[in-house]
Length: 460
Image 1 (tube, one colour):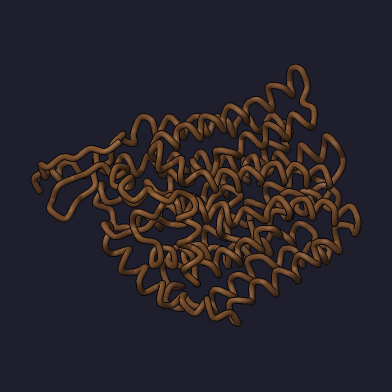
Image 2 (image 1 turned 90 degrees about the vertical axis):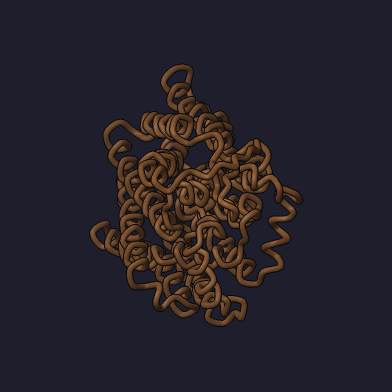
């Protein structure tokens, strides 16, 4: 996996070779777009399949459990697997495996039938390799950016834009497909996205990524990672546990992810189906939130970073999560609910850049895969419980009481950075992150927002 080349390329050759150097990172961004768009389609289609096949909110919650438990397992093992097998191989294998399991759902549905237990098994398998694949793509960005002579801040901004756009496009596509052909056939488009993603990485991302060294030599970026690949998953947990800011962020997002897991697997699908009487609008609900988040990320990148800190972080956290649930508790019709989701997305759009800046400042080169794998597992750990409790609560207390409770709990958790001392490190992390962004050789990757369910951004 390692390899070195001691001959530095001439400066003139660097200039003429610049377009070719940019192809790998552009291909990676395109691969992320297609894979994350597919995840967004599945996020819409699978709960609706569970609801329409069983008519039970609890069944949707159980499907949410089977969709989120693999994120914990995959996140726990993902960093170790990515370090062992390499970023490129891990990305390709994860996309192929996800595509195969996803396409099996509509194939079985159209032929021999799709029992609920089989659906759960396929959802579980499809999600198992998502975290390693997402981690692999995320940790490829810094080396590919350095190889392309692209400033890290620009690469991170482009990656965030791709992630937000993929969620918005995927959700909107899912809504249209559910309305036209139904939720199960919509998964065919999801599988096609994974196939395109794997081909892009296979064809355009090199096996060995040259990485500039201090002496002008180049080394294989993945090989450089191997020198630090000791301690595995435990090393990632230990690193997070010993850094108060990272520990506080992971704990906060873990708790709010439980609410959001209930939101996108049970509460929003039930609201769309039972209150708005149109399952297809779920895709447009998610798409509106994602569109607002995309705009919020862009605005934050231009001006918002000047005010980044505890107050802004807490304000955005509350606005990103609470208003949609409270609006649903008041029985908001679709023309009211969609603007609320756009506004909440605007607030959420600022959160990933703030979290990413903190990660840049805290995580050194060489700890990438394990720290982000451990982070993925950590923030996903509460999601299965959240999905199950969401289904139980709707069955027991109804949709109105459940979404009201979710909104009020989000207010309390989102405001906690104002009172917890650990979050005082946000301003210092911002300063360090800016330095890291200016020097690609000392970088750390952006948080995977992913469109996977284990993303750090709340409210999705």
